[in-house]
Length: 555
Image 1 (spheres, rainbow, N blue to C red):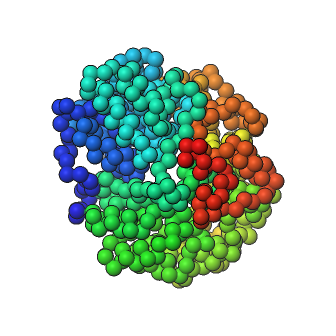
Image 2 (spheres, rainbow, N blue to C red):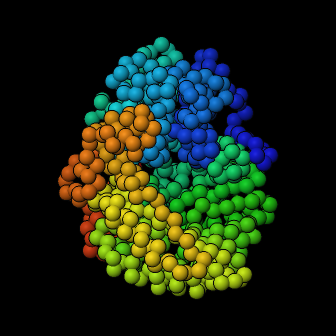
């Protein structure tokens, strides 16, 4: 299917833009945000593809910021008219947009105030991180990867609803299905539903891909396709490296089949460790032979080779993004960041030699146990980078470099889940040290996140149901920042203390398959600076170090 630049193209079934509702269950697939966000959200589009395949469902797109009151993008049906409203939740700040959409539609926010339809459900990454702050709004939470059973859950609801069943009967029909959490009814942790390919713990069952390619998307006119899910390196701060275990790779043939089927003009390769994909170079050569444009979401420094950079530069790459993560070798080792300075310098040298215009480095501050001395080696390292890449010194080198600096937010289901978060004062002090380290280096600039916003993200990421009133207040006040001024809770209780090993955590309602003792061991290893080997290529069946394989098999 060809596409014209700047337009919106649907890659999927030949079906009406606005499906008829007669004899079908209307489903509002709802994104807390605008069209640009939704059209670039690969997970949401994967859900659309799964549900649109069911002729018993009338699936419609709703972008919460596109209209007030919210309405379906294609038919104009108001959100309040849908018996099933399904939110895709990726980021904690989206709780406010989701709550605002319900209230603007005249739908009571609290589940307890909705004895009848609609059923309000949610899924997405937050569903298997920490959904607790928003649970009082939900009738149903799908915990896991959509390919592992979401379609069956929605289909079961549809069968009961279309047969005249009430809301309670619909929920009764799905209580036994994998990945279903019914707030107020489910007892015990819900095991995350995981999609494995033919029982393999190393292959991705079905690569997620775009259903909509649009000039209005954040990734303009780009067909996104998933190359890998999860990451084998086990960086102790990274939620994706834990909640998406086991790490899985796409089959080359599966990805090629998608490109041949849809023939997009430009594709974006999505994954957490793209250079770990053994078929990356053959695939890029194949795309070049087809004349298909492409870009990569992320690469590791130790995966940069002259051949890869030559291909990427030919494809138009101008910015190379690398993760430095921490300002010192000590903190990088403690965080289990498998980064060789030699590999980093080799990568930036190649970038300069191949005409890369811009280098971007991700840097995290506010680590547990961080000291001012951890910043002392940053300036010498930046100087080495500047020399190796010839940054800002002439036409043959890299023109400029950006340090993108963010505070550590200790996330659920990582070894950091017991750690305190840095105070605003400590975050600001870290920013000042980074800026001082980069001061006077030609071609360097520093970008930072607002400390208070980072702390808000930490509060929502680590909170429990007592934060639900804060979400409602944020809708009324217009922002979380203003709502915090009147909230009677104490952020310090969630953010500023180290939690004991056996404390009940709000996200204990979810079982991601990783043994709690394993995460605690990794937290202890962080504190003592001991590294852990990455996941083995053979997969979980041969390892079983963190317990994920047994959980994925239902053991």
